[in-house]
Length: 176
Image (cartoon, rainbow, N blue to C red; front, side, top):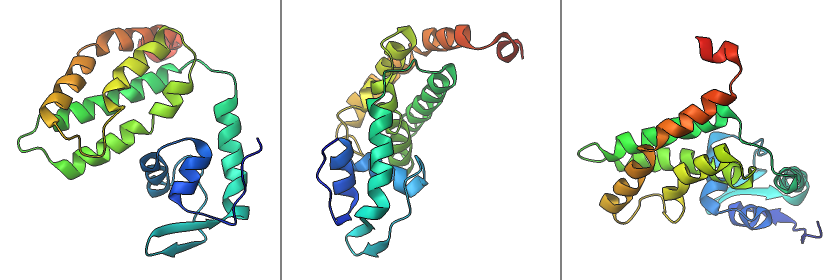
């Protein structure tokens, strides 16, 4: 892959190496998800990894991202729906609990790279559309009212996504 190797990596360097945003890598580390190794140390500026610790993991994540596009699983589509419903519910509260909203947004944004790398089939397009309001927002969207409208507009279209996902589930799963 010819990427420059470094002696040490922080969140920013990992994000740059993977072509992802820092918030996503931070969320992966905080939630201990995606197999990210524990850091080799902590500085006041954040976690730090030795190249020998993190580069093998970066290579694996890159290889997964460079693999041919796979269809989105029905389970993943339903997970995206649940996460966006949680975001919508928090946006409807008065007053809005910004800490919980920020956490829910981070959890929903974790799905963006997977959805973006998925096959361009009906379910993949539906999930990408559902997640579309998450694209150009920070942890706390500047205009919550406009953001709320975008999220609610997409969540209103959730029924077709659920129908598409249900069609793809094995019969035993949909019978219960």
